[in-house]
Length: 190
Ligand code: HEC
Image 1 (cartoon, rainbow, N blue to C red):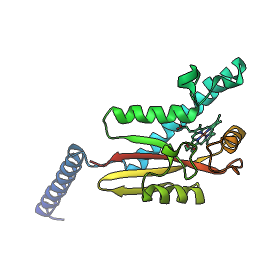
Image 2 (tube, rainbow, N blue to C red):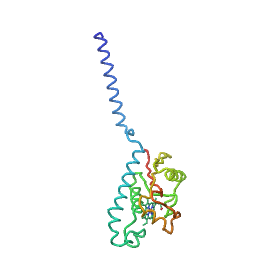
Image 3 (cartoon, protein in one colour):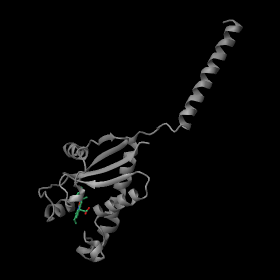
């Protein structure tokens, strides 16, 4: 290769490199998404599940020796401990109140508490989809709002027994590992 040819080639490679560095820098500066909404929902879901599991194992179960009724859905009236499902709902309301746009809640097609039913057709479809196949996460984006629905399974006999015998439960035939509902997580994409 001639000396001029080599110079031109080096100059060209330099321009390409600078353009690439600038472009990737601009991408970061403009805040272009590096993590997909699906992954964000996975992160949030992992935190919710960890908190719920630990509240159930480190607080509720360890308090059982103080009496079976210590954990009660009427905790507010009786000065008792809330159920894990109630803790999750309260935490969701607290996050919603913070005004950052993130919302989450526990819902079901067969809710003990009528307020926990699907709020929209999309939620109904999503809860049905995760009930049919708990390994899927149902996602949707409507008017810039991303929503992910994760299956909520009967991981212990306690889930099954309490829901099956609850007077307000519209479904009484749950078995271990059945999908009882879903965790709905939503946040704005902008
Ligand atoms: C001691 C009774 C009890 C146990 C144990 C229990 N739940 Fe619940 N669950 C309830 C009550 C009561 C509610 C309604 C709480 C509210 O007012 O939001 C509820 C709410 C729910 C909901 C929201 C829909 C609805 O039914 O209102 C889901 C889903 C759910 N529970 C799943 C589970 C799973 C999964 C487990 C086990 C890991 C479990 N529950 C254990 C009593 C129980």
